[in-house]
Length: 345
Image 1 (cartoon, helix red, strand yellow):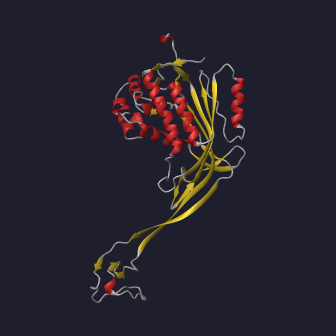
Image 2 (cartoon, one colour; image 1 turned 180 degrees about the vertical axis):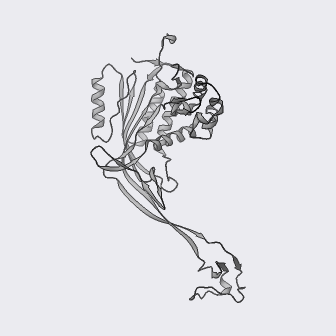
Image 3 (cartoon, helix red, strand yellow; image 1 turned 180 degrees about the horizontal axis):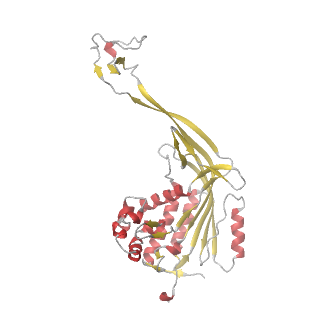
């Protein structure tokens, strides 16, 4: 059933389904063997192979965006303030407590709450409220491997100033460099002028991909602040709404400015994002139909029509700016759905 919290429509679940164009990127890779970095390769149900960006990478991008958007880092635990991947498991305040108290303390951290954590002692797993599937390349993805060279000067054992070569000269036979125009350097027992000074060169190979990628993600606002042991909320509604808005802003930021692998030299050229935001306003999951399917939007619309008793809204967008705008509108008029138990009645 539909619900209102803080005078706004309550949202149970949100799914983001779309196709984004990323050109000349290398956001997620298989790994590096020797001097060659291999791109991700996925096999689909029909046996075809394509490019992909892992859900782990997309989740990492969302985490970093959320962390950057939080102005008051005191809302994070000591581990999340410095982006330790262990989260609550690296926070002494949490790990020294028994399970119930440990979970209560961990949920005070918005990053642990929204993105989940795993405790070794005491043993407990908090599932993330935010989920990502692989970003899957639609045919045809363009893939290239580029060769690059890195140069460095080799160690210099001795040096002679310009015009002071004495009896020494450049070891390269056809060198005609005049002593007054160059310093002289000793490398591995031999002398070289500035022109012929040896360098160490390393060749390495890096992938670049371009194409349209299918995106699927689910956000469960109803679980924000919810203790999975007691099924009670550990934070007030106003704080739950703040975290809800922060998570949606991080969705905006991650697609406007992706920060994945190799972005220092392969920052993606993003030029299109189309799709739908599916909002469930009753305790029914938001449908997730893969954008690999050309008619995925129509399929979701058909499901909405069948589920008449469940309040599902389908919000279309046709660009990055419109995606950003639609999330802004959603933040203004909605708030997280709240689980009601007997103790709340």
